[in-house]
Figure (cartoon, rainbow, N blue to C red):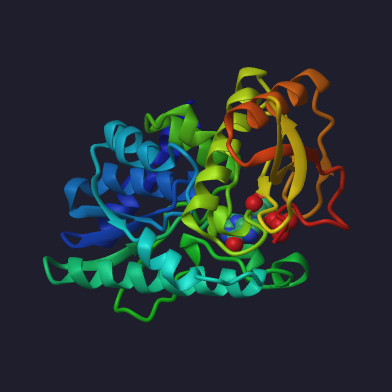
Length: 321
Ligand code: XMP
């Protein structure tokens, strides 16, 4: 619509005015906000924007490709991917306590991102840092009450500003639905524009127990089956998200083929929510649950049980850690 088109025009003009002939860096998380912010800045200053995507090895199947292939194809943006999976795995070695995991992942993320910033600064006049801050974030950061303090949140928007950057925040006046419409106006694919929320610490906080590459592989496979079946059933817009959680330190006995197995349960955590502050567990159709369960136990080695989380928030948070 013309209103969205005019928001785009106005922001593009403002970005051009702010950045002048300087260069900008934007961290991509795979999420909507950073993608739309980057696409707007790309529209304004072209290849004087460089995006940085940190692959911390805790992503779901296909997520890196979505950024490297789909986002780049839609925008033509300059992208640097930093492959940091080994570093994150080493830092997380043996760690089981959720807050400790979150802090380690957040800390490593900042270190990796700052190194990428230094590398770019050595190559050109990168004075601007793009962030996908939305209007509700602006309002909320005045307070810092309630759920925000229950878990130490990590996302690309929360980086420290200790390096000499001036912030570019083209979404500061927008609500989420407007951000999505701006994204579509800029030609971003639906898969990015309507992506469900996914936590910055990624699958690291969906493995209950220590994070290892073998466990990540199991969880990635189970998660991708659940997402495939939910999408095929047309349920993506009805649910807020459906974390799949691997109870890696729990074993359960099963029988698969003619053999006794001793594997792990995974938990499905489908939730409906408006803003993630409160949530209800989603009454998914039994046939969809059945397909997910059958496929996961057939296709994912080491998983012999699928259980359903029927807890609302409160008392349960959406993520298990
Ligand atoms: P909880 O588990 O607190 O989650 O009920 C509420 C919403 O926030 C997401 N979440 C995060 N998002 N960084 C993020 O960007 C984080 O550290 C983080 N932790 C939780 C969660 O997926 C849910 O949508």
